[in-house]
Image 1 (cartoon, protein in one colour):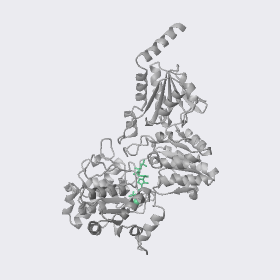
Image 2 (spheres, helix red, strand yellow):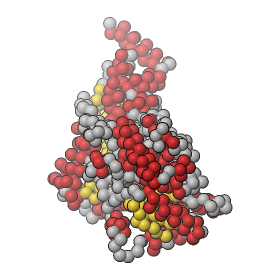
Image 3 (cartoon, protein in one colour):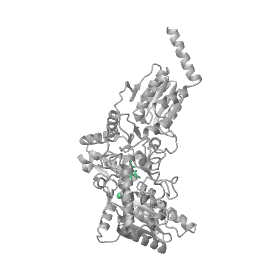
Image 4 (cartoon, helix red, strand yellow):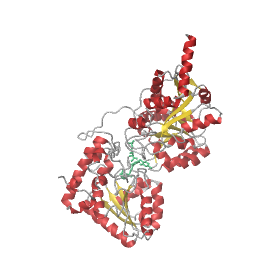
Amino acid sequence: MTLLKSVERPADLRRFDRAGLDLLAAEIRQVLVGTVCRTGGHLGPNLGVVELTIALHRVFTSPVDPIVWDIGHQAYVHKLLTGRQDEFAWLRQASGLSGYPSRGESGHDVMENSHASTGLAYVDGLARAFELRGEQHRVPVVVIGDGALTGGMAWEALNNIGAARTRPMVIVVNDNGRSYAPTVGGLAEHFAKLRRHLGGGSIFTELGLDYLGPVDGHDVTELQDVLEQARDLARVRRRAVMVHCLTVKGKGYSYAESDEADCMHAIGVLDPKTGAAAARAATWTDVFGTEIARLAADRDDLVGITAAMLRPVGFAELAEAFPGRVVDVGMAEQHAVTMAAGLAIGGMHPVVAVYATFFNRAFDQALMDVALHRLPVTFVLDRAGVTGEDGPSHHGMWDLTLMNLIPGMRVAAPRDAATLRAELTEAVNDHSGPTALRFPKSAIGSDLSAVRRIEGMDVLAEGQHPDVLVVSVGAMAESCLRAADMLAEHRIGATVVDPRWVLPINPALAGLAAMHRLVVIVEDSNRAGGVGTAVTQFLRDHHLTTPVLGIGLPPRFQPAGKRKDLLAEAGLDAAGLASRIMSALAGDNVMALRRNRDAEVRVTA
Ligand SMILES: Cc1ncc(C[n+]2csc(CCOP(=O)(O)OP(=O)(O)O)c2C)c(N)n1
Ligand SMILES: CC(=O)[C@@H](O)[C@H](O)COP(=O)(O)O
Ligand SMILES: [Mg+2]
């Protein structure tokens, strides 16, 4: 039996001596590398918290003392130590273990998370609940990275926690000096000083917390001593104690430790022996990255803004060519957007590139700080639509609904590389107000040419008869075209149109809709409130009675899985679309169509 196998629950960890703990840590690292190189996932962050997770589970009694993992991408070791070893092989697979804490999986998981900087608020709430319920022996714990600590929510929580004098809690800062890239900003500099024991106290002491550290996050004995001290101090003094823990991202796997870009923060499948990733096709992000760098060469006013994800959102080329024109604000989407508003007022054209799911964070800033002032800020929403293995929180399925609510916001959804380049150019050339582009997480296919353009909209295919108008949003074009071919086999004619700029609705759509018997809008976003809703309202407002069918993601959290499979499950593949359209036309409608057509054939013959 391996050492790890003997740990069925956290209490089993208490049997180990120091030598045993070191062997256990080595075994856990082997499992992490072996599994994550096969499934993909957050390798570097988890390799860095092996000893920390072991020590936490030896010192605290989870789940009586709940352990909250901010973001939660570093909770794999916690999963291995809390009864989930057998399922670990199915990490991030459809119906397998989630890549984040999951209440459905274990009572040791406090919440489902993954959007950063929420952990301190959760433990503030937990500590208040324990106080109100008279369960004051319970000490909630939160582990938060130096990156997540740059997010505004963390500081709102610290402001509350610092003033609390009756509630114990332990805050572990997992300081590896990196978010993806090295963490930036004044806080990062403060941590660097604390790391080197350079003068002055910690800012956290000034805020009312007790501060212990820095402690070596890979020395399990030292860690355990400090965590015990923190737990006891928190209990006795009834307040928050912060433990500053120093770790190395990617620890123990040389390829991760030496990966300058991001210490193998989030990997795809790779060969564990060589650390080499499988060859991959060009992605939408790649095309954006090259194009924005090209545009910036001719435009001094273009400035890229990223919330701690410079490479993942495609700003590497831009940063290399014009280092002064990419701003990393830390994990602070709200600040990114309002700061962009300031840049725009100051005469620049900011390009804020974030994953679509993280745009949720900055909705109010986009609405009130950018759109209300009609500022020329371009939002680039990567990972829009179904993303895949990261699961419910990471599908970019709310952006179109949110964008639809913002007056004056123009949204483009490119269908291929050529339209991505063209629409990005149009967006940054629009000085009249905010613009946005959305595209998915996937390889980018071949360009899909248009048959003709009608008032700014590309007609991609025209059937023999104008039965169905298929309004394709962005990357859905390929499936829409294949669905049109399938419909043609059933003598149903489909016109497939790519509006290019999907919001607000192009008025020319009314004319096209009037010529067809059914309008179908296809979007890989939440059906509720997105382009389908906007088209429906637009047609009704213009007294058009053509029936409308909106096909999108149902308004519920989508599970983890492969993008292709999840799209098919939602009926957003070609076969699903063709079948939904035929059902909508079924009954008297489709029969009438066929009868009319047969009659036409007989008359002309
Ligand atoms: C609100 C939000 N923005 C961006 C991200 C994407 N993201 C995930 S992990 C990460 C870096 C995390 O750094 P840190 O908290 O220091 O954890 P580490 O990976 O270094 O352990 C980022 C930017 C996110 N999860 N949530
Ligand atoms: C935790 C988090 O939010 C990111 O690390 C995310 O998982 C990365 O996703 P991609 O792999 O799509 O870049
Ligand atoms: Mg970090």
